[in-house]
Length: 130
Image (cartoon, rainbow, N blue to C red):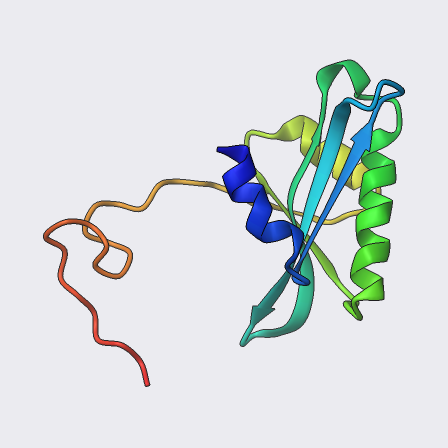
């Protein structure tokens, strides 16, 4: 399942995926940064995930990946990086704040049935915008 999700991202210029490995070449952490484009702001780097194996937390790997992600965003001409994190991720918030990031805290919930553009069975279809 992970391979299916990862494969299309690896060659896409709007995705930056960096992996940190231990001395035995086993992955211990990763960061996924994307280019976010919207009407209300210039293209912006957005952290979609930063994960460090529990056994390696506190070793500076997360900070190094974050710095590498920021460099990658700057190399793509992006001047801003957005960090969003679920409200319950207090430890992650403290990490980002220690690293000088301003964290947007999100309350996440699944789409309700019948919402989301008519994708649910029996949901009305919405007209397409021209």
